[in-house]
Length: 177
Image 1 (spheres, rainbow, N blue to C red):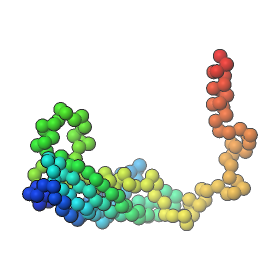
Image 2 (image 1 turned 135 degrees about the vertical axis):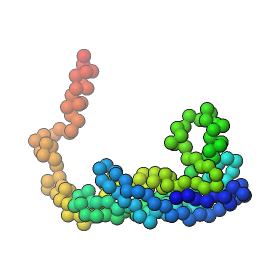
Image 3 (image 1 turned 60 degrees about the horizontal axis):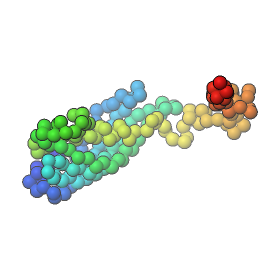
């Protein structure tokens, strides 16, 4: 969806508030489909030179499944952003000066700015590595070691050795040669 920035183009240097609703399509993240709802970007924008400065907050809800019990999980997302968009005509003039790829550069043309890619990037980077339904998850609780069984099975066989002792022995042998 597009954000109309025509007011900033007419009054360079002046801050304008914005509230922008967007949609993020379902994303495949580590083999799991994550859906996003209530995606909202809010903040201020201003135009100076050939650059549009956007700063604000992205809020959204992400739906996935718990990594332990596979129950549905809703994860709230709130992330601040501060981004510079470069006008398309300006990019053509400085293409040789900067070595950033076109995909890494946020660009706009005309009086409207596409914010979908920014919203997608911010939301996906804010996701946890694994969704969990909380401390009360029976599957995650079962995976936690008991107090009396807190050591791994291979550590019971060799209680006096630490996991990297074999590597330490190899290092010592190399130093003797």
